[in-house]
Length: 458
Image (cartoon, helix red, strand yellow):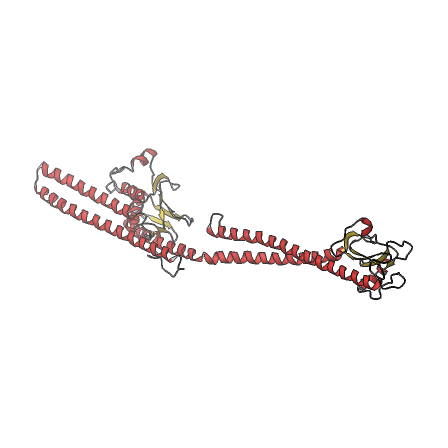
C-alpha cells in the first residue's frame, strides 16, 4: 500500500475517522457516567441525612438523640470517610452527637461558612475530613419537636470523594481498554474492507498484464457490476486496435503487391535491352524495389510498435539462431554462449527480433576469433514500459572510434573480404529505432566489439 494509492486514501480516511470519533465518544460516555455517579452519590448522601434527621429529632425535652439505625456500616469504622454529626447551632452547651467513625473530632457546618441552601433546603460542600481525606457533605438544619420551634441543629452526613473518584478511575480504565480494542478492530476491519473492496482492480491489473505479455487477448472473468462497463470498453478498445493494425497491414501488403508487379515487368523488359539505357533502368528499378521493401518494412514495424499483447520469448529466438550460426561457422570453431532467462520477452514481432539478433550475431561471428557472448536482462519494474537490455560481444579485433561512427551508415562495409551488403547494421538501427529503442557500440572486455541494445520488454 503506497502513499499515492486508492487503498491508502480509503484506509487513511477511515482510520482517521475511527481515531477521531472513538476518543470523542469516550469523553462523552465518561462525562455521562461521571454525572450519573455524582448524582447517585449525592442521592445516597441525601437519603442518609434525611433518615438520620428523622431518627435524631424525635427526642423529648428539645434534645436530639443518636439514631438507632446506623444505615451505613462504615459509620462504625474509624476514619472511614463516612461520617454523620448532629451539632447544636443555638444552644452551644448542648452535646454534639457524632458517628463512631468521626471519633472525638467535629465537622464545621456549612451553614457557619455561609453556604447557600438548595431548593430542598440542603447545603452541599466539599471539605477535608478528620484524616485529611477529601469528603463531600450534605447538611440539613432542623429542630426537635414542632417544626420551627425549639433550638436548631446542624445534621451532617459526609462521604469520601475518593469513593467517587475510584469508581470513575475504574470505569475510565475499562472504557479505555474497550475503546482501544474497538479501535484496533475497526481499523483491522477497515483494512480488510479496503483490500477486499479493491480486489477486483487487482484482477483487472493481472488481466491487463496477461494481455500485454501476450498470454491473453481479452480481459476475461466476472467482475462487479460497477466495473463491468470498464471491462467491456477495454475489450472493445482492444478489438478496435487489432482491427486497425490488421487493416494497415493489409493495405501495406496491397501497396507492395501493386508496386512490385509493375517493377518486375519493367526490370524484365529492361534486361532485354543490352544497351546503357537498359542497364540504367534495371539499376534504378532494383534500387526502387529495395527502397519499397525497406520502407514497407518500417511501416509494418511502426504499425506493430506498442500493440498490446505482442510478445516474443527471447530465448526461443536465440537458441535456434545459436545452432544455425555455429553450423555456419563450424570450420572456425565459433562458440556462442547465451545468458537469458526463459521468461524474458520482447514486446514486438518475432521476425523483427530475429532480424535484429540475426544481423548482430552474424556480424559478431564473422569477426570473432572463437567466442561470442550474448547476455539478456529485463528490468524488474512492473510499470510499463519495461526495458529489455541485450549485450552482444566478441573476441575479435574490435573497431576504432572512427570506424564505429562510420559502420552505422547504410551500405558502408569496413572489410570487402567479408560477405555481406553493408546493410545489416543500418537495418538493425532502423528496426530498433522503430521500437523506440537504442543501439550503442563500444569496446568489449573480450577485446572485440560490444553492441548494447535497449528494446521494449513485455
